[in-house]
Length: 160
Image (cartoon, rainbow, N blue to C red; front, side):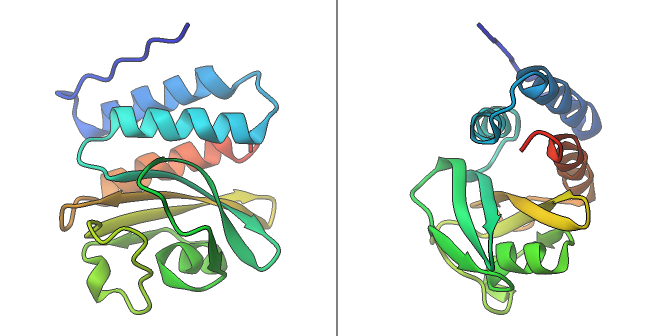
């Protein structure tokens, strides 16, 4: 049994280091991508405060399809280039959005979301998924959050 317990008092870099170690331990010898995404979604929800959604969208053809997540029911399909997730996937770049209502074309899957961080998971030259974090707080995410989730995406790129 796994019992990962984050220390909420840790500075962000250390919190993300611990999250990465926990995700590595859970996914290291597991070949199933869905199982790995499910466990990592649960870890992100445990480790990262002030979230209302944490999970994955998988790239399938020319769209994103909902993957494992923790939170309220979500949009199932997102066109490549649409909204924050589709933009991250299409451009292969991290999207750190302080106010989702100011983002052109934002897709409101959960009306409570106010800020969002979406990080592409790259495999070779392409994007295979995105990690999506939503918060009911404005400007919840910063450069340290982006760097932490980018490190997680890099580690997961060979496990999903």
